[in-house]
Length: 354
Image (cartoon, rainbow, N blue to C red; front, side, top):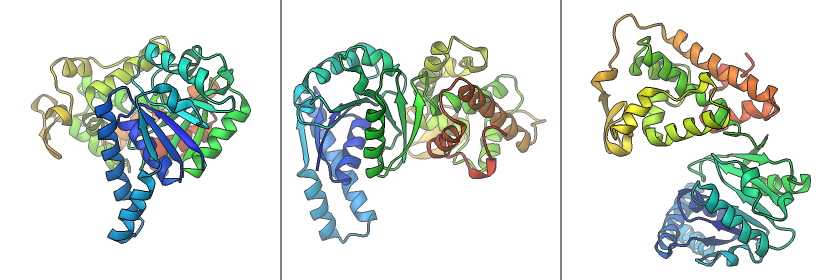
């Protein structure tokens, strides 16, 4: 049994803690906010109970199993305590470079010499974060997907300084947690957040040009086998979150026009129409129930065939996949696997090269 250190008791840190406990690890969870640590323990308990129940345990056995897992969870507001004695430390703090660098400075000074230090960043450069460490060879990215207990994908982002043994160790550990890893270079958006960016951007381009409506575009992608359409997805994730990701990748890649964020998104975010969490986005929302599409996105007559809509969006994603592979970000096989696991891309769509 080994010890895993986790920095950050938010949604991602809590989810990572849960899956580590499920795998039999001892976990030390850190946050500067004591109240956040209390809430995190409650969320981990609830998540573990769902996990135990799904495994077919009786109520009594589930309670015992959860209690045993929680006995291996310790919380602390002292950052050094997370690193001391841990074989792997995963940072899941706020997406601010200065904060992450200060954390890695402490982790690098406190962790055992053979410990692996990982960041769960989805938007920042792993290389830039690692510059705070003296031993940069043991730093890499482990990008989990939300919700962590249910999403099997972990992107392993490797910097030029990361030692091969560190990559192998991290991948092997993720396998014991039941995760599927895909290896990629440290590049803006890694695989999924870059390659799948056209899924929403191309849909927004059609909407901007009046070529198709929100309803038809979403229906076209569901017909194709996707779990939800691009506008449904943006409303679920939050338009502000999606826009921030779009801006981050666009800026980091040199502002290519093909990935330019949509002014429609900008306007909706500025108006506070952030999707489900705000009650309004592209659709109206009442709790978990989705209402009719907003009147300003109802569309007009003369919509293109759904197959044409889906084909255009998939072609844009395929083009980005080929660019990423050509730049050496990841192999086509890794890109294909990441898209399937990270976005629900249906197997019927074929390879991104098609």
